[in-house]
Length: 115
Ligand SMILES: [Zn+2]
Image 1 (cartoon, rainbow, N blue to C red):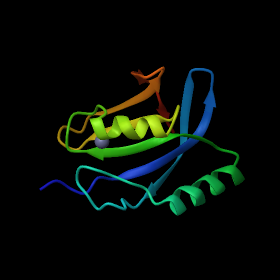
Image 2 (cartoon, rainbow, N blue to C red):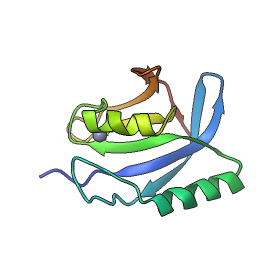
Image 3 (cartoon, rainbow, N blue to C red):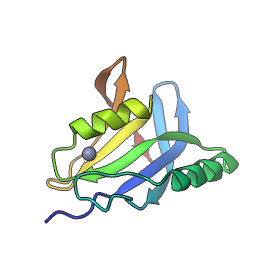
């Protein structure tokens, strides 16, 4: 049995090719699933409002899943919905952490700094 997927929204500063995360807003996984996650739209809206007040930009989404730290087919569908958001994925099987971004329909590894 794997733990329920953890998920969070990442905020911080974006400049040129650099993304610096200064705020991690953990959000409950609406699906309570070990293999899928979904964040409640109200939680998303509240997190965006708070970030705006703090003058932080939306950087991307973090989640954990019980597979290697790369986007699953479900994640790919999600990436298309979230546009140019960075996806930070933690493998709950080997603890590896990696970031990805969808660019012109292909998944590229991204660099992301966490403060
Ligand atoms: Zn995933």
